[in-house]
Length: 244
Image 1 (cartoon, rainbow, N blue to C red):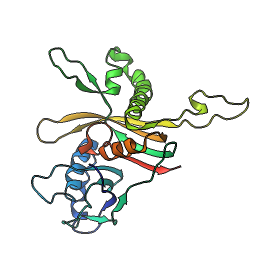
Image 2: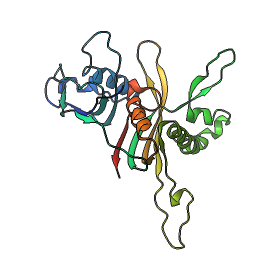
Image 3: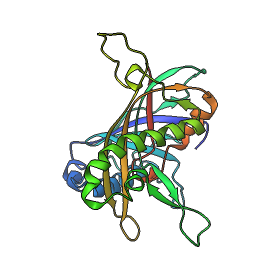
Image 4: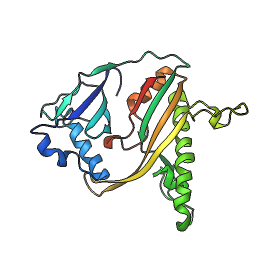
């Protein structure tokens, strides 16, 4: 993805014919839903059999999808209430502060003996790999916060942004003053079993919410267009931003 981006909102219609297919289009199981969402959003861009994915997407509410794409979506099957796509080209300068949400498949490369490249591994599972099974529940809760934050800060170092420190992160707070809310919250973690073209894949998904400071606008916008982490075909990687 490059220049000429569009931000769109598409909502699955609640009247025929989409309503009759709603249970199939939006299954209750989270893993099946990610696979169904992949196929559903593809209908807006499948104008050629050999097309490669050039968009990011995320389901925010039941049946509501936000999409960042190089081409405007086209609802050839009349499945969506599709808002007019808006050109996405924010004017940013170093030091701008943005509020953001992000759903990410955050991974680290784990070295595999005999292989030149490391194997992608969910950051939370990687953090608790050596923890005894009986202690993993509590360890996982801590890893969601610490490993999740560490991963996003590393993304920022490469992608032109930083997560600002706040009083709640260890800054000075006057006696009797309430500490401010942290500039980053890891809202949740879950693993999904996604069926798609072959054996089912299991992916870990982290949900983030917070604020960031733009350091390099060009690099940051390019990273927004490319997406963060893996499993972008299944609703991960799209960072939604707004000015604070």
